[in-house]
Image (cartoon, rainbow, N blue to C red; front, side, top):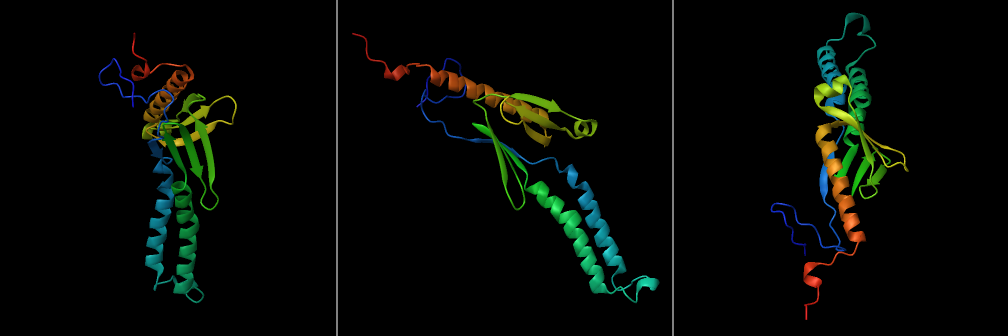
Length: 191
């Protein structure tokens, strides 16, 4: 049940004291431009392997066989392409209606949370290359815990606004719930 609002078009808020569901606002990964070099290595290794397979250069043909070439190419692709991709893919930032969650780690997971109700400051840093791509780094600090750094976030201005809105709404709801505001339908009838 929600309280009636005076403004048309304003989203309905839950009744005071009622549990509010936690909804996902956004989930992002760091900007994918860091995968440029691994993609370039993959193309170069595939081209070089295809060119040299069955046609090794004359001075090394005695000791270089195709299986050795493919093994070296596979190792290079594993170390310089697959591992950076997995590191990028396993790092996510999730913004919900209650908190910000950073999760990272390929084999062992690391999770850091920061609640909106406590409030925090949002600092934005953008280098020249980040400005070109519309990315940036957001630093969320509540003054007590270690700051949460959201590094290379795409559409950083939009994420900054979404975080500021979530903090504001969360603090308004927390303030409203801390005071006893009677719900319109709960009042006894007048004699």
